[in-house]
Amino acid sequence: MKISKLFSVFTITNNQMNDNQIQQALRMASLFKKYLNEELSSNERHELEVWMKTHPKNHEKLIQLIQNRHDLGTEELKVDKIQHAYHRLISRINEEKEVFKPIKRSIKPAYRYIAAAIILIIFSAGLAIIFYNGNENGTNDTIVSVKRELPKGVTLTLSNGKIVDLEEKQSGLVASHENTTIIKGSGNLITYESSVGGGERKATDAMNSLSVSRGKQYQLILPDGSKVWLNAETTISFPVSFNKKERVVSLTGEAYFEVLHASNWSFRVKTREQNGEVLGTTFNISAYPDDAKSLTTLVSGSVKVFDQTSSKLLKPGQLAIKENGGASFLVGSADLEETLAWKNGLLVFKDETIENLTIALARTFDVDFDIDPKIKGQHFGGSFSIKNGLPNLLRSLEQTGAIKFKMNGRRISVMP
Image 1 (cartoon, rainbow, N blue to C red):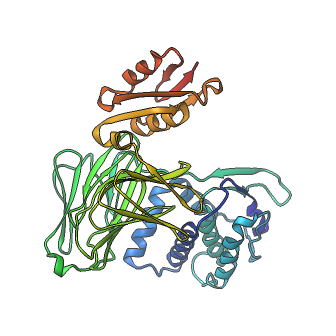
Image 2: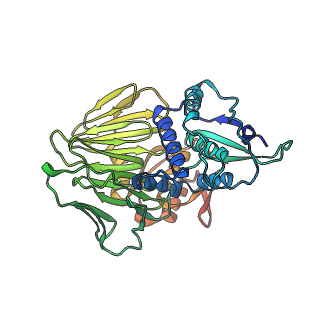
Image 3: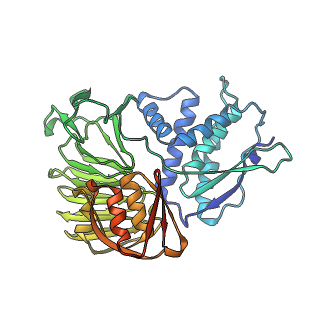
């Protein structure tokens, strides 16, 4: 079987792929190649293990291909039918060919190249990959969709790769790293306490990640004392100790930040589509990968949002909207009540479509919705307490007379 038949079609579902996604793809490809060559450092091993654990379906597909006993030969991987938006990615892949040279070890040389190429492809957001599963003349294809999945509950991944279930962990010491101790407080709170002063800050490559699945929320106090509230289906990655120049965290999902002010010590939040930079500021970022846009809402202070082509400086009460794959930001007045409702235990909808409303409910209550096409596009509004539970919320919506719900376990049908 030829290697080129492993990938027969690429289907583009987004209009554009940004440089951050390309760099992330190349980074994981490099780590996987080093893993196969037994060249990973401890920090790199942790980074790769975190990816494997948070992308189980993609990891399983990699293992299946690597363990395949067919002789795939050494023919170069051929990729066809790539639209203009992906030419840059393909050229980067071609440039990397010399990097993935065969080394005589326990895994066949061809697999090293295939595995690295797969990593590049599966990290290209917005792609559906079709793997060849038939024989030489077969036509059976299986479509594998790329979807972000988080571990259930609330988990903390330490720099050594250990995963701590914070819902099962008792209050008290969780772990320690050099001059930083990690403590679980009462309720949904994890705190990083540093024993060194600001003038003695010591940079570290040790990274931790806190993941909150659907139906959960959690609070984090970072090593510098900044506070972060994490909404459902959110992951934040951060160093155990910030360096002297800047404080940088990475976010996927939604979080509310109260950044501790420190002159000449900027705080930066990186998401898939943008960066936000502040000194001492209170703001909310919503950057879910499945949403069509990212939203940055400034409550107090100032924040600069930027990507590789544009930037905007926000004032309190303003909102920056970045369409995923878009080239610029739109700035307008923010509805702080609606934006910050989740942090205060509320869900507030103001003339919201049933599609967007159910997306929020799915994340908050860990359920799935099937919407009858007849009611798609209809708008609803209201303010609901999360602690009152989903059934009460659905009954309130039904009182409008325009909608009905039928619950079957964690799957809910939405009908006119």
